[in-house]
Image (cartoon, rainbow, N blue to C red; front, top):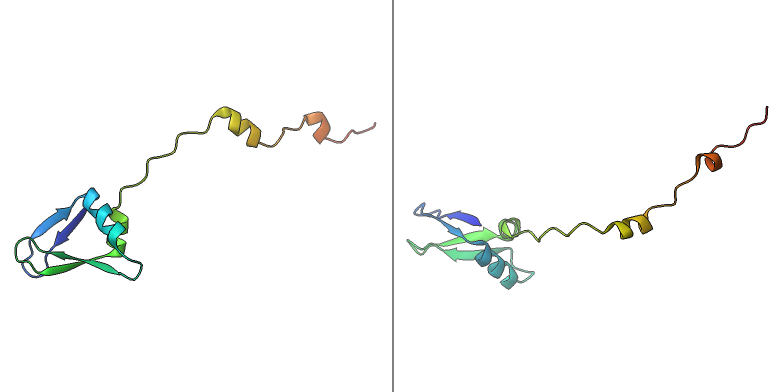
Length: 89
């Protein structure tokens, strides 16, 4: 959600997350801002690409990896007998 305040009449309104996503997807790489008209006075207000990007909904967190994948990715454990050199007395 992006909260916008008109710089001319100081009217405040918000863009929903869905609107922000739609607007951000419509921006071309050359666009640095999006022009939003004030609903009260119709004056154009600029919303920067950075503001829109920060307001985008975050992707859902990935589920934890199953233990079988974790075990396969972990390096093999060493025995304490193999790790320590033998000492002769």
